[in-house]
Length: 125
Ligand SMILES: Cc1cc2nc3c(=O)[nH]c(=O)nc-3n(C[C@H](O)[C@H](O)[C@H](O)COP(=O)(O)OP(=O)(O)OC[C@H]3O[C@@H](n4cnc5c(N)ncnc54)[C@H](O)[C@@H]3O)c2cc1C
Image (cartoon, rainbow, N blue to C red; front, top):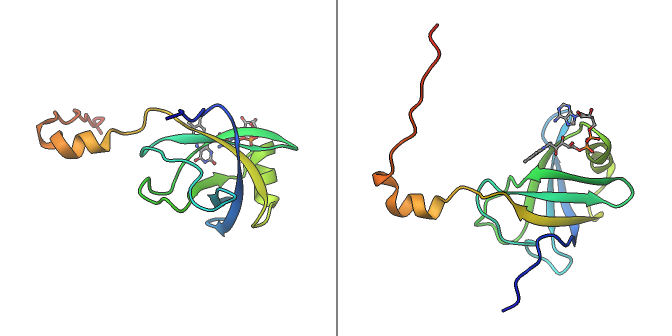
């Protein structure tokens, strides 16, 4: 079975845009033939490119169990994000990834109760 090259951008389509706040929008993205452009682990991110402007990295905010689409919640902050905020549904973008190790949620669910919990120290008031 050929491995997918996560360095190569794929074409994706913005299917739905939801305004969350004055400067944050959630972009639902699908492959041109439908479905999520790729599988990922919780906590991973992807590079999103808009050819006229450039590329930036965003966390994937949809669930890894959702196979119909990917979602990104993006704050308008610079060139790429400003451009994305001006696009409309059905706009085509480039997407590559997933990147980052992700959280080993399957391992945790299997042996979680035996994993030591990280120590949390609160600052003294
Ligand atoms: C691992 C990772 C995950 C990320 N996930 C998300 C995400 O889920 N959603 C999201 O909105 N962003 C996320 N970011 C941040 C995003 O990649 C950057 O904000 C990116 O630079 C935006 O590209 P741009 O071209 O719009 O801005 P640029 O043109 O690169 O930046 C323009 C100017 O704005 C400043 N700037 C950029 N971003 C911010 C910001 N967030 N707050 C204040 N000033 C800023 C820069 O310092 C620069 O001066 C993530 C970054 C990393 C490293």
